[in-house]
Length: 118
Image 1 (cartoon, helix red, strand yellow):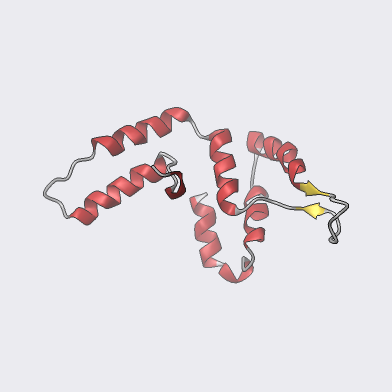
Image 2: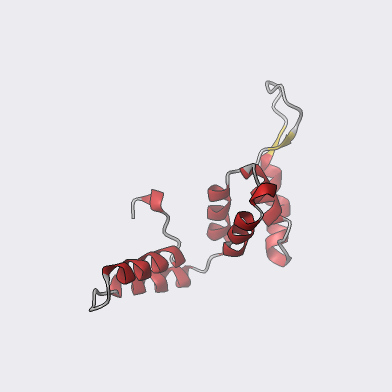
């Protein structure tokens, strides 16, 4: 997903609407991820009779999409390993900014999100 974020930043003029980000990323799925997405995306088809708009896909936001991918495909052992590294970090003679950079890196790799209160 990091590559997608870099791409979105580089070509920001093509992704002015956040709703374009998720279908673009999903279009690059292969193998098991592609099979999973073919079945998962049907959950986002909207044909609400009370809606004035024509039937269409109503995809989740980018953050929710990334969360869905992590839930489906992230190896729990990887999360545990990075959480362990995060807890083992110690302040040393390095600047505090270096410590916090390492802490944020491990938290990100462990899949911790800022809105979960962790």
